[in-house]
Length: 126
Image (cartoon, rainbow, N blue to C red; front, side, top):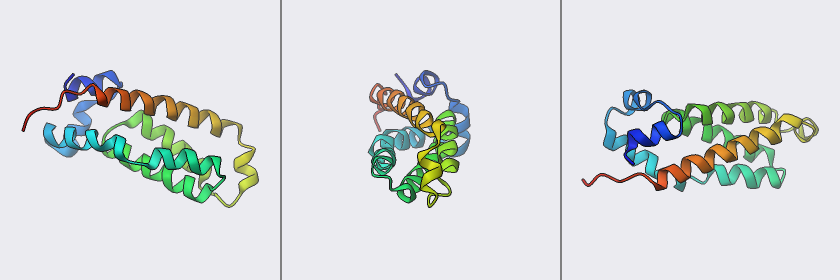
């Protein structure tokens, strides 16, 4: 599949990202690098370790990266997680938040869909 078809497959707007990055080759370059970013893994491991400051940083990084790539629905969930972790020193509030686990589960599902789709992109020859 080409990069436009990839954006369709994940329910995102290719025109949005092309408006930002200006060239299909640039979009493809950065999308293909997305799975190399360790922010998602850092978020999950930080949550497991109850390192909420690091989890906040990881969620914030995910949000920014996804906004740049116009993975807007993914970025919206990361934004919600970021806000829930913003007061990372309030561990009791974080640990009692019943919505946070669901958000992380939804984020995980979307992450898997995006990474799986990236693997199916036919890389154009340069």
